[in-house]
Each structure stands twice: as C-alpha cells, then as structure tokens.
Length: 116
Image (cartoon, rainbow, N blue to C red; front, top):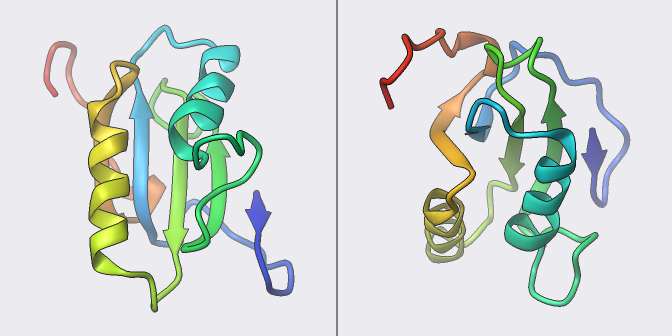
C-alpha cells in the first residue's frame, strides 16, 4: 500500500478503488513490478505515480482470483481527461487481462477460463 500527501490509512479488500487492474494469469511478480514502472509511472520516473493517484495497492494472486493485480484510487479532484488517458494506457498493455472501474477488489467474481 502506498499513499501520497496524507496520513496513512488502513485499506481493506472491501474498500472501493477507482481502478482494479488484473494482469494475465501466469504473470510473475517481477513482471508486475515492470508493469508498475513502465505503465503506471510517469515517463522517466519509474518509482513515482501520477499526482492524481491517491492510493496504490498491489494485490497478490490470493487476493485477486489467482491474478497479480493493482488497485488504484484517484483523488476526487483528478482531471477526468488525465484519468481517462491513464486508464486507456493501462488497458492497452499486453500484460493486462481486465480493468475494473469503481469497484472493491473483493467484489470481483472469478471469471471462467477464456472469458475477458
């Protein structure tokens, strides 16, 4: 869990996230970290996240129906244009299996094999 510009908060799998990103089954933890630094981070700043990201939470396969996943929460004042462009950038990455919007990670039901 990471936070920016505020007190540390306790987050649970039942807290709604702005975006939950499931990576393809078989993705390794190292590939997840590469995804974070090459897709989620701004260009040239592989350890940072955009200013509109309030919370980053890495989910293990035991928390995300067998997938490595990332939950992101955006600040309420985030620019809709910036958020839309960011989510589209995430969707285009070949490691991404599914992107869920405005949902708690534990509300995502397992999908049968082959369904996207």
